[in-house]
Image (cartoon, rainbow, N blue to C red; front, side):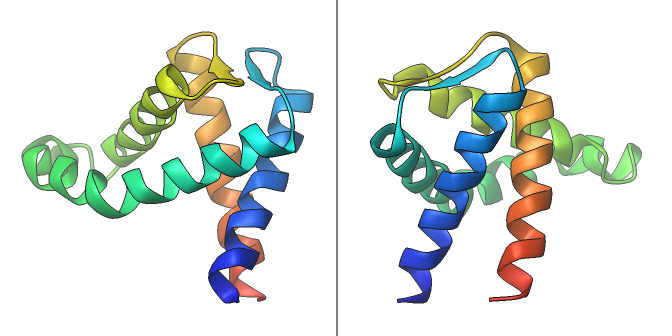
Length: 110
């Protein structure tokens, strides 16, 4: 039940981000739910591999490179999900920041 709540919460945050960030488009609730599931899968399986591969640059940047990894995964997810699109990397960067921040705070209180 908690997983479903997290997925729906992320989907709602994606819809809000699409409403306020001009370069991000989500066509509806169904596309937002699919995008949140894909983002969750990418964060579980692909993100740890990317973190290990980019560990030297992450250490040199004091962890700030993690923001670019999040944005790259956000942008990558938008490339193959119908109804979810991101105009360029910087919109993906902004969208991933907002989605991560709001989802983290909201999941803390669940």
